[in-house]
Structure formats: structure tokens, C-alpha cells
Length: 120
View (cartoon, rainbow, N blue to C red):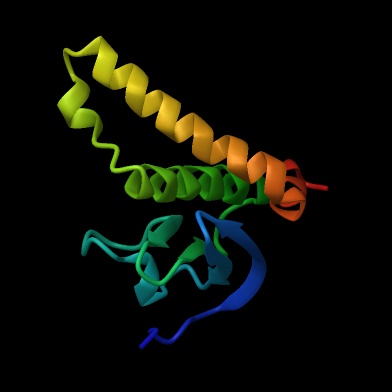
């Protein structure tokens, strides 16, 4: 059963066969405090396939935050853990390749996401 989704829907995009949503929420929304350290500018809920962005940031900050949270989604799906690659160049290169494939998939299949990120 999916959890309740908060805030205003900004856009939808597919990633790895899942439909993701990007939603804006108030700066003090409890969904922005996923780690218990206080609300941030954005957060990615992997199991719900939802990224929440704070309404308290500029448009450019929101775009940067969205790219950051998408990066987390790609890393999670690809089982990328950079801490294991600290001294291993081959492992680091493999992880970079996995993340690159995720971004390439988005570039090829999600023109509306790219338009939003570019401010168009």
C-alpha cells in the first residue's frame, strides 16, 4: 500500500520501469525531514518513487536539488555505494558507468524532465 503523497505535483517521469513523481512541499513539511536532522531542500523516497522539493528555495536551487535526488535514485537502483570504492579505481569506474546509464536513460526518455531542469 502506497503512502499518502504530500504537496503539489510538479512533474512525473519514468525511471527503471517505475513512475516517479516530483512534488513541492512547504519548507517545514515533515516529509523533508527524512533523516531526523531537520528539513532539507529535497528528499527522495525510494520505495514510494517520490521526490519532494522545498518551496523555500529558488528555481535554480530546486533544479539542482532535483538532479541531486535523481542521482540518489539512480545510485540506489544500481546498488552504488561509493564508500566501497575509496581506493579501488575499477570499482569507482563501474559505479560511474552505472550512474551514467541511468542519466542516459532519463535523457533519452524524459524530455519533460529535461525541460524542467533546464528551466524551459
